[in-house]
Length: 126
Image (cartoon, rainbow, N blue to C red; front, side, top):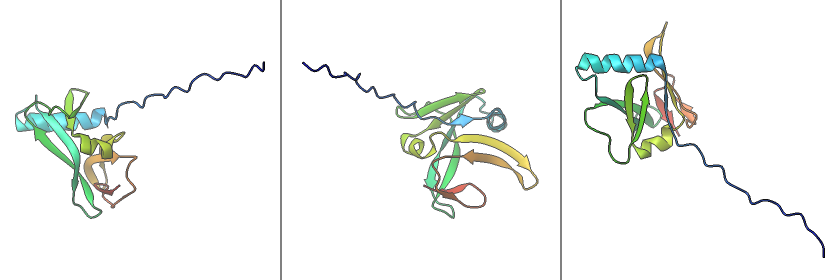
């Protein structure tokens, strides 16, 4: 009888749930916009829509109601963000920051899913 080595079964490591990272600086700007609007308890809806010079663009809008049942809810530094499942596939692992510099100020998106972007960084291709 030949004793063969028995290999343990391969166990798949589950992928962490998709998420979006919001920096403290970006959250501060978002919260400021909500306060200025008079709705500090509202959320920000973040996603992707068709348009822009390369095909898609990022979108922010105020969301006064609760999240939809299928939304991903991200909370960071006192800000709540909703992302729909279709957009999450395109923005998962994105880092949102807010920058000020010589060329102005605005949100900066570091999205590893982007294959190309225009010069402003707000219009992207996947």
